[in-house]
Image (cartoon, rainbow over all chains, first blue to last red; front, side):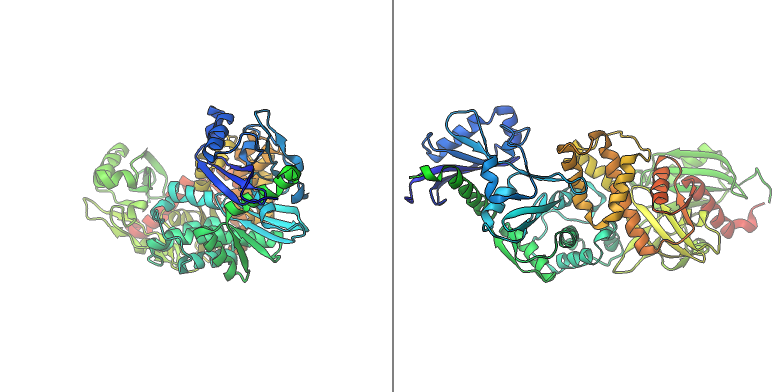
Length: 306
Length: 306
């Protein structure tokens, strides 16, 4: 394999964003492009023109293969790449890739579904990050914080089970649309403050109490027991603590734990997990996506990379 | 005491509503009036003119005493009637009534606060309903379903402790502002359907799982495991089941249980509690308010009722 020479294009095509990289045969990025043309945007404008524009921005030879992960493969996306079902090996993801009827060799990786009536769940995009942060024989947990946080139990390189928590989205709708808008100031500090850690601790102690602790946040301020300036950190702590408590009891506090998501949110989770006695390794999310796309691309086309 | 003769005026003055009754000395209503002039409205227009207009609508002699409960006694209300603190006897509520500097004898009953750093909580208006549905030596639980559901443990006629759950408000903001708006149809059936009971059962089995079960509701529909038509009932079941599970573990599944709130919501709670093996007595909320106001009024002015 020759480095520095473009081998393929990797794309993480989400609900509301497009991120693309021109990569060499080892997965080293040579150029990158990004934009707001996510699945929702493309439902109107079409997917092919958006991809063509970004390939142009990358200066990519149109004969290079393109591998896509994320919502472009949803039923309401470009073409549907049907879900694989748990348990499923991560190094078999590429076998579920769907080829798009368009110019060149463009394929979309599948998501993973948990078709379990007691715990139905789906992911699209995160499976590729999982492939990027785990070795073929990895056993442990992966946490992907965000709007819809995901916890995944991986056994010997296969996704055994997973759970999604609406943590980030609940923070947003509660802070903006509920009575707590008076108790949670916008643009609050996102460091692991004492108020955040106290919220996490309360939630871990009584994780079934969330819908009452939320009202308690408002009541505590009315009674002068807590400060409005701490409201956002406490709300964040309550939601993240509830998530961690349930994930641990459900998936088992199995080491190692890999945490996908550098930046402020990753730091908050790392601090919350450390307080729970759990050590994590933090991995950058885009790095994870690129690495997963590269591993799948090598399976699909590696023999032809030159 | 003479019946059929007006003795006093009782008012339940909430955040967004006004309800008033002309009552005889036994608490039997002779006339009633209601309107949307809650505390939020009166913060601009003033409270005295609103009361005067409703007294006119009742045809009440302006010399009759007026007893008010609810948000009119909040800090941002007409005058503040400072909270009593748990534990507090319900038949001592009238001792905390504040007299308003206005024409006639107008008094506002206090709310109750739980100034406990581990479980801070407040109520205003519900304490009067509690007085209305419990005998002086009552021991047991009272549940008041609603936007902010309340569970109260009463020991020998005193409020020992209580907890508020943001159940109704969370239903509303999640159904309207989160990704679940696609999974929850507006105007859904409010009977205790199988989907509702299944949601309650899931939540009672794993009450710490709420923020994940919410995403599961969407995932189950994507995977064809559940119907969109059942989404609202399931969401309602998950939230109410979580509330019941925590309230029971916190306050003790102590009998008897009085449920304040006739109508569809009361029926839903009664069904959910029955499935949990708990029998309830349902009491109408307005009846409870009127009866509580009457008991307090008899303490305050009963000797002068003629």
